[in-house]
Image (cartoon, rainbow, N blue to C red):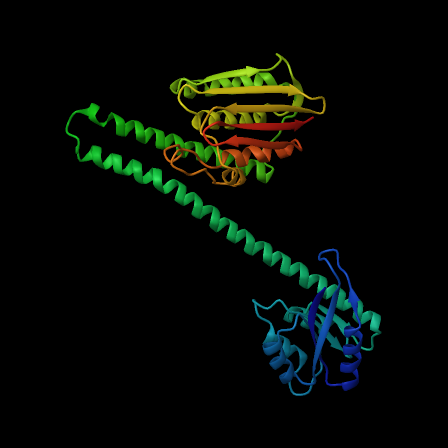
Length: 372
């Protein structure tokens, strides 16, 4: 249940008590929130008292009489309306006119209720004002959440880019100052390490672009009948140089044709990420086995390696953005921490599922089901 605070401001005691009685008995629901909404109320007979109660009690809804002694309703509204305030005001008056309504709305009132009115009129107006209040709060909450997520995203991105940039800068300073002497070959290792760092940053930028295109819906999908095995073979060709450097064998266990309606580029992104990880986190002279099965309603792809594996705790964090498994064995392995997050978002486009089986020092197996 949601209990909102309503302040009733009117110089007529009978009006105050009548509106108070109606609102305190009023319960309703809205699609925008779960549970019933009801009110607790306070009243004020003057503008001065209303300003005081708004400051101290901070009501959610104010029913404000237009004609008050000494300070008018419009003057009260002007006094209590601020950019920070979420309070919704309904102006109540016996002097209903277009000019009065326009003045109140310009001053910040949400709606206008003309005397005399029935209890049902009051309930309808207050329900409408409450819905506006709740929607405004949801919008503000979303804006705050967006700012928080943006800040966290930029903080993590800055952190991830800072280390490779500092490393490259350090290597360049050593080269510039000729710290290792004048033989150019003495600096080959530093140049190569710098190139590796640059490749890592380029991969991160590429992953970020993929991620934003998918999440924003701007990635144009081209769904067509496709032989998934062709996509997997292209991914194997892409991964071959990295596999050769570590003397890792990649074997594909599948029929020559397994077809489904899909976007070729999405299947290749999935396989590129899985194979990249299977090679990076594998041992020298390791093995990567890819199996593909057509299970009528879905295509099941598994990629198993003989690498360093993961603990159950590490597996739970796998699909978070910018998350990389960090321990003694992974300390020198480069990565953006975005690949598996992107992979999961693509799998979701096929109403698919991802399973991980892993054991430290024995290897990891990813199983993906893409539904047709």
